[in-house]
Length: 83
Image (cartoon, helix red, strand yellow):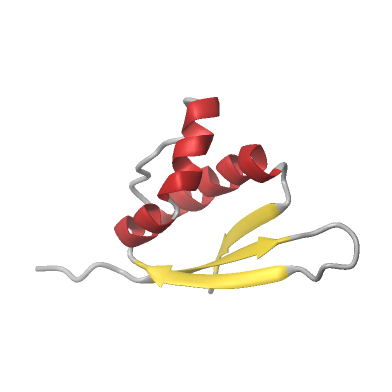
């Protein structure tokens, strides 16, 4: 059986004022990362049905997360795939 690929996503939260930017790395398969960010995906999907709650690929997961964070945090959080 083929082993599932493990990815690392970097989530960056930006703040106004004197608070520093916060960066966090999360590692897992697409399914594990989808479960980790499930609340954000549900919030995004509830406001915009075109945001999938269960993306199938890492590219679609990153895209869905960025769109969901735009809704949830007003564009103050960004997610990118770490090389």
